[in-house]
Image 1 (tube, rainbow, N blue to C red):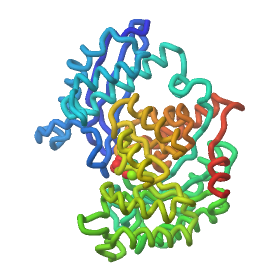
Image 2: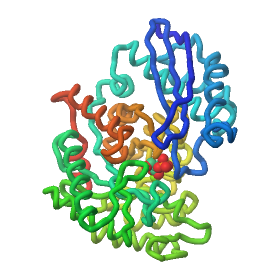
Image 3: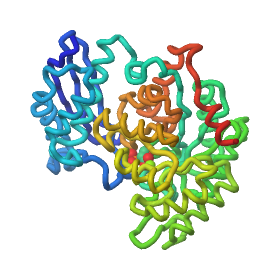
Length: 429
Ligand SMILES: O=C(O)[C@@H](CO)OP(=O)(O)O
Ligand SMILES: [Mg+2]
């Protein structure tokens, strides 16, 4: 009954109003799995390739009809008849059919959509929720949400250099309470920004996008908002940033243009982060440096690795080979996990295994261009990694993931465990 009998692709829209790919996989039993793929703006150069039509007469060239065609023709005939539970074999078959290292012939967007739809169809046929299908009996850990409440960089039209300022509501007993605290801080932040005559329109991931005079000002606002909402900064709600270092790098140095600081070297930037970590409850820094600056990353790890979670996004692009190199060269202690950076579920699971087995942390992540698809919520619970990054609580494509986690927590009942307390305890020790 797990035999794949039909595969359909279609062009749908993402949260930025750009086209993206959806796939449906149908099994002999009639069970159907549907998956949409997201799309990034601050992409790593070594990410698997998202295929776009380039035909300017449709969506300014961003259409995905070629990827849809690849699903309906090439991928459909390759996976038809296979057992949907054989995820690794299905993904290997699609990879080999594509034949390129970056999945550029058929498109990583096409391949990932089919890969995820297979898993969802198989889970449905097993009558299991996706997180249980992926993670088995141990899938009981609810992740700490990294809530991006101030947007800058390429995700917003403002002067902030740092792409994401996030809340880390970890000092709570349940995901529900942690999310509530994050949302209350979000509202307190809005009131504070308004009172200071800043705009409260939101960026791509639903965080506010004010024109603050400096990155420190953003951190100050956040600490004040945590207090105004009645929480203890650091202990209950900590802070995190994604500097998106590759976007700050000009080829010669790093620019914090909003602060009028230009041509910084890695040492200057690391010193700046050290000051922020000293003065604010910043517990996690993602992409502190550019993807090619491995020496800079080593410096960052040596200086802050003992007390801060240092997450590699563009530098690793969810690629097992790059993660292995990063572990060998000791450049970070955590990895951002994005399904569409690598392009299949199996390779994503391999990246997760490699990361967690090495004692590093993994953060399952959305993209800045998202859809209503909630796969990452189930993946975060399924792999029990304890951390998810999926934006703020003011846009439907982000709340879809949070709401899915609320439902999973309810379903798990007393057996569910929120990761916050042990993450906090480990960082405090
Ligand atoms: O840099 C990031 O981590 C992501 C998601 O927040 O952004 P994008 O999807 O634009 O790469
Ligand atoms: Mg990032």
